[in-house]
Length: 332
Ligand code: NAD
Image (cartoon, rainbow, N blue to C red; front, top):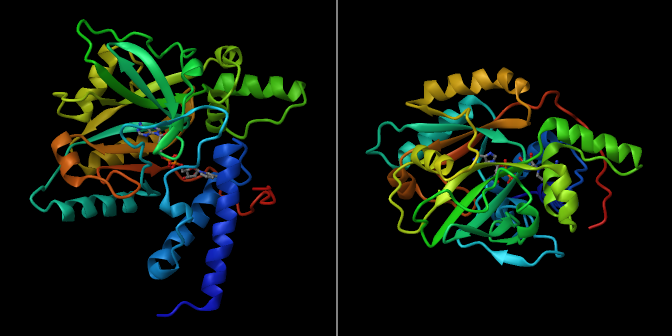
């Protein structure tokens, strides 16, 4: 079916709205629309693009991972790209995701999953050389991030030296830098008193803090860090679960609420349990991340242009679905 001018017009409109929103969100750390609205517009664009692939524009937000890094920090190319995660917005979509990977690997009838909480913070990559922290970078657009080493060094839950007798020459660790809710509220109270703009959510506050030019301010804000990915060249790790345990032994804080699930039903139970339980946590979560445990199967499934095929973010519905876009008149 040929696209009508109305369809092209709607796509252009979505591109414009999403581009402005994503600039405000990733670069200014100051969102202009609710996440649920962003996700809804993004989905609409994705659906139109899959119906009319000839209308996919190379600058569409569906064609890249995050946003361009801001310029005040030196940029660093990631050794291994920092991919985003595919989203599932309910259990039915999670089941579809499972069917999809099983179709890709028909000999595989079942797989163990590692369920982790999806912490609402900012992803960072840490490089250790001979056991010493030498670099900390933001995700940026997934290919290139910003070098925020000085700021990362202020995070107490990030070891400056790995707790290992014979550290390998290079170790790369990834995880989420985040602000606990009480710190987030305290920072916003202080900002209110000073007449400064408030942070919209802990994730933007964490991202904004990581990009502070003055490490002393970062230090005062007390960011925390949960580690979730470990890369060691020529490593002999076999699974995500093993990696998480190794990270803990190396001195990292690993979220204790992880669970090894033998099948889809166990994932469903974990998801449903944390939908209410997460309100008792001292930090924000917006879903769970489900990863295939076995590294051999992960390798077999590989990546799309944007996502690993072996992991999915299973999100919780927004507390109340906002229907309005707050303001999209930001200058880009
Ligand atoms: P995402 O937040 O949906 O998922 C990927 C991220 O999850 C990773 O980069 C990592 O930072 C994080 N994560 C947390 N815990 C993890 C764990 N245990 N394992 C692995 N990763 C974990 O994807 P994204 O590409 O970072 O952001 C897209 C989302 O950002 C959208 O869904 C939207 O809600 C929001 N967004 C909002 C606006 C807006 O204007 N409100 C604009 C742009 C994007």
